[in-house]
Amino acid sequence: MDVLIEAVPNFSEGRRPAVVDAIVTAMLTPGVRLLDRSSDADHNRSVVTVVGPPAAVVEGLLAAARVAAQHIDLRTQRGVHPRLGATDVVPLIPIRNCTLDECVTWANVLGKRIGDELGLPVYLYEAAATRPERRNLAMIRQGEYEALCREIGNPERQPDYGPVRVGPAGAVVVGARPFLIAYNVYLHSGDVTIAKHIARAIRERDGGLPAVRALGLLVAGQAQVSMNLVDFRRTPLHVVVEAIRAEAARLGVGVAHSELIGMIPQEVLFEAAAHYLNLADFSSERVLEVAIAKTAKMIDE
Amino acid sequence: MDVLIEAVPNFSEGRRPAVVDAIVTAMLTPGVRLLDRSSDADHNRSVVTVVGPPAAVVEGLLAAARVAAQHIDLRTQRGVHPRLGATDVVPLIPIRNCTLDECVTWANVLGKRIGDELGLPVYLYEAAATRPERRNLAMIRQGEYEALCREIGNPERQPDYGPVRVGPAGAVVVGARPFLIAYNVYLHSGDVTIAKHIARAIRERDGGLPAVRALGLLVAGQAQVSMNLVDFRRTPLHVVVEAIRAEAARLGVGVAHSELIGMIPQEVLFEAAAHYLNLADFSSERVLEVAIAKTAKMIDE
Image 1: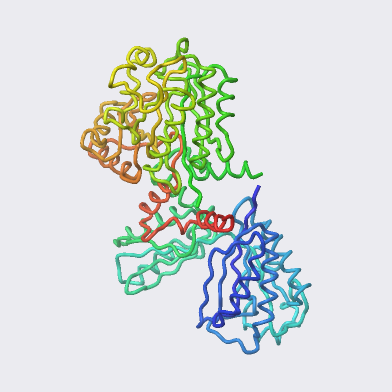
Image 2: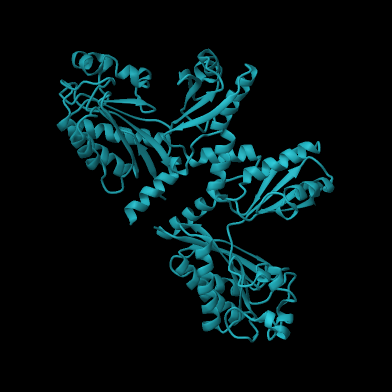
């Protein structure tokens, strides 16, 4: 049975293509596949998306972190985006035949090896966090590299793995989280207060839908509800969209188009389709490509 | 680039499991994968669903037709379902990186080989038909095996491949067609005339939606619109469902649940979800599993 996880490591280098190339090349150990990469010069940061079997992904990430530590010096690195280290943050995400808890285990495997083999301090975050205040990445990264250099000796800054000492490559934040869907709904309105109102009505923070984060924005003159669905199994996408439609209708505003940022798991679209088609007893095994992939696997194994 | 076709051969044997097993085993040549098989004793018929690269599927079907011809004698075979031969009908269906026209070519390759190597008369049907009246399977099968024995010498019964002579294994009908979606919508009504009315309003035959076949039925006391979507790219599933909802609303009847028979291509559900979510600029490349499968292929090749 093939187990797949995704990793979306962020590196504090977005200006020297040769360095980013070297990092990505190191990451692509056998079994690790590149889904996406993007670099931003203003942020001076690169985000890489890979998938593969957990052990292979961990091996690739360790090799990539080694290369990043060799080439990125936080003492001189500058960019708009906050950062703590050369390899700044590494979330592991369960994709196939894998639980979030198993990704927490792999985050610990990776964190320990970065600490032991690369000699870098490592902090665990989100589902892998060892203290409640470390679940939140922004809290760990507070004051960035410069503050960490001064404060790493403080008890609250004690790393989860690696030395209590900050070198030029800084620290690495490693964690596990569910797959995140970034999704925006545009309104037939130029009034950002309506988008803000709807965002408040639907987001978990203000008593709305579980695992939904939302903001009201004005994008090119159009009101937009911008969202992260941090656990699409707890609150499916179509439930969120219907909640927005209902709230918008209550406010007398029409809903325009939606926009997906990044990727979406097939299951989310299958379930939305089954919901709207009112398709009883649907299972993804009824999907031709899923059934074909399953027989392919039976032959391979 | 992997090319996949589906074949759904029907064999005139549904009572002797050992014979069906031998047929299926012969069909599973390297590369051919079994998706489904079912046998019906009343119909005295078995339907097998396989997928694979076209050349492998053709090889498997030829081997299966040979075994079927050895074990099934139409002179004594009896069942509820009409039949012309031991291997009664073989539709080839494009699945991946393959057009319907290419399936027509493969139907000709298979038909010629069944004619030449197994010495059976072969008729081409649906998209592979060589005469308009042979597009329709029911027309080719008229009078069944018994009539064909008497009439094969008539010009209108001239086979497309193989001898002008009927043996105990009868004739084989080979063809190509698009993937077919079998889909039923139940109404909140026990009145079959409403289902019949809606079926007439939406089906192609009566000026409705292209590539939609529909019947109004009464199933366990509930009115049902029973459909075959014979080309889901011409008329997508969600367009049909919305047409039924609109017509039902016009008649003052509510739509209950829907029901999928057999399999459905993922693209149909992706498009339905994108439609109902009002998702602009959606492409299946944004689906995580599709993107992963694509990178897997790049590595394999």
